[in-house]
Picture: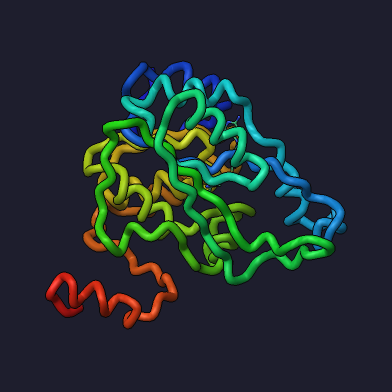
Amino acid sequence: MLELNRIYNMDCLEGLKQIPDNSIDLVVTDPPYEIQTSGAGIYKQPDKQYVKELNLMKDGFSPEILDELCRVLKKINIYLFCSQKQIIPLLDYFVKEKGCNWNLLTWHKTNPVPACNNKYLTDTEFILFFREKGVKIYGEFKTKFTYYVTPLNQKDKKLYKHPTIKPLEIVENLIVNSSREGDTILDPFVGSGTTAVASKKLKRNYIGFEISEEYCKIAEKRISETTSNQIELPEIEHNVPQRQFDWLDELLGERR
Ligand SMILES: C[S@@+](CC[C@H](N)C(=O)[O-])C[C@H]1O[C@@H](n2cnc3c(N)ncnc32)[C@H](O)[C@@H]1O
């Protein structure tokens, strides 16, 4: 029997099979991307450590995992970081087959990898959000933008040694919008533990799986250094001049 507030060093498909039906409130995950990592810019250098590590997580994931996620969720309520190539199959699965509502959120990186030979920069990452009818969204005006503009956090990347670490503040924002204190959040592809750290900070329970022993240890250490005392979300810069909301202030009759 699996325990809450633990990360398991195992294949997530094996782990998911041990989670009971209808027991998870929210999934926030960042599965292996389906991307091409050769041909252009930095990817022409297969010996580079960054390219080697990225090659470990470029082959996507089994669709059987999606069936398991739907089984363990009380209601479908799931955020998936994904590559452009994964958008259509994920929409087919969750919207066509499961009839979910959806949003496409984006993270615009201000310091992308310099690979741009005959293609656009990979400076935008996608986050697909699917929810079944009846699933609530909480949060407030400032947490409900559908885009984030932040640099790749090189400090966290070096500190936690994961090549595709996601910004903690984005994951916290998603969790605030789609769960309550005490809820249980699952991440089947833990990496350096960003979802679990955000869950712990925000007083949610977490459970997760990570196939690499090394990343699993990093995640466990990072989680152990986290305390559950967060009161306010960190501000996320959306680069929107305040004056664009003057008309809204007038309408609401209140000044910001
Ligand atoms: C894109 S990374 C997640 C990064 C994470 N969001 C973070 O901020 O650190 C995906 C992770 O899934 C792991 N992984 C790949 N296949 C897996 C599997 N079948 N079961 C569990 N983990 C797996 C990889 O080792 C990798 O660390």
